[in-house]
Length: 170
Ligand code: AMP
Image 1 (cartoon, rainbow, N blue to C red):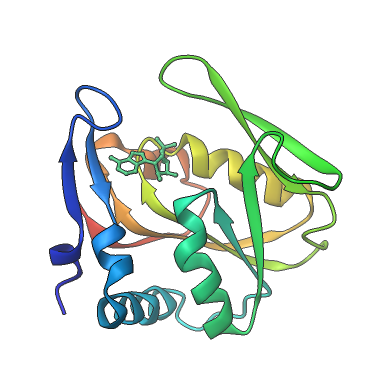
Image 2 (cartoon, protein in one colour; image 1 turned 135 degrees about the horizontal axis):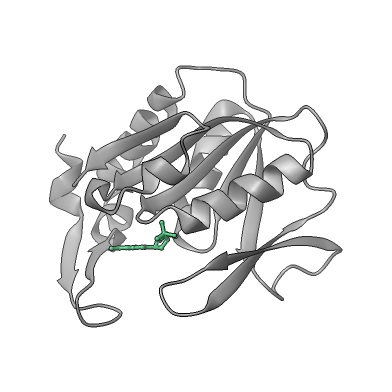
């Protein structure tokens, strides 16, 4: 099955010059999305994983499904101010300005083996901030796993310390 057929390119969204990879056609197709989950699970090569961490918001869709397949827990990393309990915060640079991500401070235990998942790896700033949060809690990042890698933005260079896997590369 050609997963790229279920990814829609949206020119100039959310702003001029960005080619947005829209995964909603993939999510809408039960056969394609279950194939996608099995392919993302295959990327992990069945390494032991305790927690699957998904990044808000599009990372949540497949991270929960991967977690179910791996019999692992699902942990959300969210934008600042969204998680209700005590959090750890990590600022990161956007193209213009800063933003920050948060995780519940009791979400990961020291020594937990963690799979990080997001839909798209672009410049890598988001995933790098997520990795820092996981490591501050003592989690061991087994792999950073993406549906799509925009290789021309060189995000993998920011994540050199980790094993990076993606299903589709543009
Ligand atoms: P970055 O921090 O630059 O690697 O950006 C990654 C985050 O932004 C991910 O959570 C993606 O969902 C989103 N993102 C960045 N670029 C795109 C794109 N071209 N299409 C869809 N999502 C994107």
